Image (tube, rainbow, N blue to C red):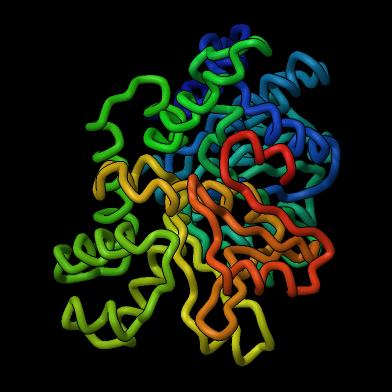
Length: 389
């Protein structure tokens, strides 16, 4: 296929009006990204597979064309996991693009690179584009490890935004659910449905369990087993199930290693692999540096639907706690542990949060909660308490 034909296939808006009918905007993310459209900036969208990064890139393109009145010929979108582009560099792609539309070198262009980490030496190529051309670059990746490892090349040139699965408000919007004030009691039923379904956009819309199973299979087999060359895929599947069973609990590397008959170093390496594909998050214990480093971390999962599909919808307290973690994740929470008693979260804003889904604190835990010198204290026990976060 000629490069010209390939580029036109990826960029139909060059020839006709852009059509994104049926796409539901994730406004909270789109508004954040829009702030950067006119800056000379490399902007990365990261996050779990299938959370909507590609959709956000295309919504941004639509915004540029329709709201900012940017000529469509100055906008290039390409998905770099396309095998036909394996031997084509970013610089060559941009050169083809400029020649195709007779765009002068000094004229600003907008570049959208989906799955940027499939391109070899992408960081150096992006740096070259940034330093030598008049561009705004928006790129996506589902691999945290690659972006973290390459970040020094782009110091001062890039911004990063992680896209999470749908939160409860977005879930209601995707499901087309609205409640009048007199029907607020129905929120609890909808919230429980959300806790069971999770927030993968396509799964929320179609409810197809095979879609979610396929997603997990891609995460395990493509992003971990194939990428890291792991010889025994079953050990990764077993490790995944072990992680899902431990959501909301402290993660002991040694215990997990013993259960799976692997070394602690191997268990630690596998844990990092799962973290690097944005499937899980590890939250440290509060305290001094040595306490944070040496104490076990707590595990949370990026999407509750994935956990429930493999473990069943039980231990709703742990599921609810996971949801609260996702709500406050950007506040760098840690868990508080003293003398065998634990409080779920302490944020970087010095807010102490204990999550109790239909339960009450014991006396010793209550005493720790009351005595700890936090700026603000919150007990979250239901959907109605979330406004306080």
